[in-house]
Amino acid sequence: MLIAITREVSPSIRQCELTHMLRQEIDVELARSQHLQYEGVLRDLGCQVRRLSVEPNLPDSVFVEDTAIVLNELAIITRSGAASRREETRNVAEALKEYRTTFHMVSPGTLDGGDVLQIGKTLYVGITSRTNESGIQQLMEFVSPYEYKVEPVQVEGCLHLKSAVTLVREDTLLISRSWVDTKPFGSKEYIDIDPTEPFAANALLVSGELVYPTIFPKTLRRLKDKGISVRVVDVSELQKAEGAVTCCSLIFEEKWPDKTD
Ligand code: CIR
Image (cartoon, rainbow, N blue to C red; front, side, top):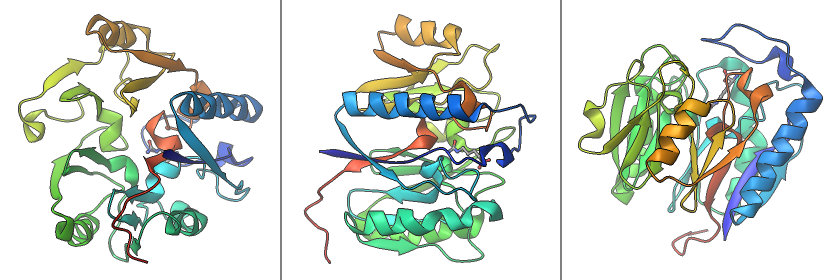
């Protein structure tokens, strides 16, 4: 069984952090209904959605992906590069304790989950305004006993590594080459986003199905032309908060036999 941890959209989402986008009016009710539809798609794809309680004073708390890295063997509670987001980890950590042994990142390390792209036993980690060297070093120390490899990746011009590149099928990456180079990822198949849709590289792969925003029709066509099966969701209001489809959930296998406590 796959678990998807999510959190209701905060009523304060209009005060969200923005780094590379201009502030636009967010329709909070519409954001909530889009988020419900997103959760519905995750359920359709076999996830048991576990929704955490709303955090009225944490504007970005719907973006749970940034608060933790969940691997089969362990979970790491991150320390966001945005000070306003550090409180978000509290009840995510509580929830994750039921499923995994958890480790906590500490100062001066910072890392956002949006900067970690897992491909098998390799964790590609974006070096961004949210993720620093100490965060990457701590991540390496937590995961190396389990034989994961951590590969730092330079990212320029966008918020997170997964704003620039995501896995859309085994060995196939959807990429914005103006924000990240293909070199660190080696010999994979690459699908380039349509250049008129700069935010189009963020896609969420769940059980072999791709969850993808409605508002990038040209890139969507490129995915379909490559034979990729896509479930579209309208997350336009969440995109105004510089979020997209990976950032609204933490998805993992419920049971992992090696959990020690
Ligand atoms: C932030 O700037 O932290 C939020 N407004 C957006 C976070 C999106 N997170 C993600 O894509 N992993």
